[in-house]
Image 1 (cartoon, rainbow, N blue to C red):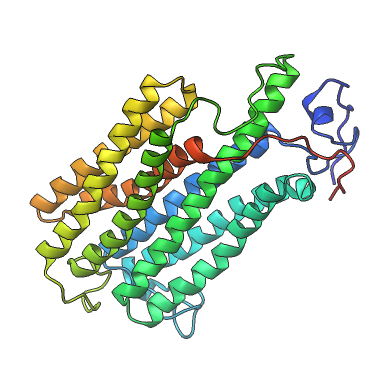
Image 2: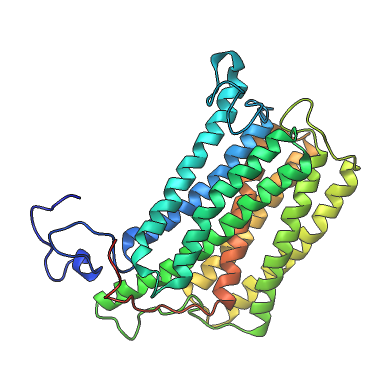
Length: 344
């Protein structure tokens, strides 16, 4: 515990957050730090998808040939294992970075576990999924990079990006609500994630984009499991026709794109909020980025750097479809924290 040299002033952020003057304690309300910690957690979740893709694309999937150790004798990689050992063990190490970010979010909402149960349990779930994901990664290695297990490893990471996006939205509306109240803007203080006009059409298109987005992600794992980048020269591959599965993957992409474009038009014609418009534009922009990369990599022989950008795009797609959907259908509203919550 550290003791500040000066107690916070009565109107300071620390007092507003429910901290006891003269002592460092976990916050008892949503703060600016809470919000940015959730953003950092989201970024790390997307980042681990990209680094996992780098492991596969550099044929380093079996750089550490066993699990949980890197070799039967060593917890870490050894110089004799070469660059592939460094890449694979480096990706395993980054899991701890993701875990630290998730743990920080959980600590910052610990005192809100009664007043903001949804936020608290989402934070618990985020942290709990990390060791579970590590186990799935271990099974991936132990099965010799079986493409079905690799797909599961990716999809679990995508679910974590989805949950992290929902958490950012909920903590964000709580933080903006408190900031507005502190400025004396009680009537204008945002209180809900859905902070503008919606309609059956906008909600339906957002839901369609969200559902088809997940179909796209799943079929994308089938395309990946059929393609040449298996993570190791001897990794098993699906015995599907690459052209057929690629075309099958493209069908829900067209549906998602159409839903996103209709959503954007409707949002721009309605009395939508700034954040609703941003989410719709972001969805269309991310889909356009991903489509350009996807078609380019397909017609240029799947160069590694383009495939890696496509992996980044998958994380962004999950974030974009989740956020656009959440800002149209969410029933979440900001609520005050309980001032008598137990301090950790």
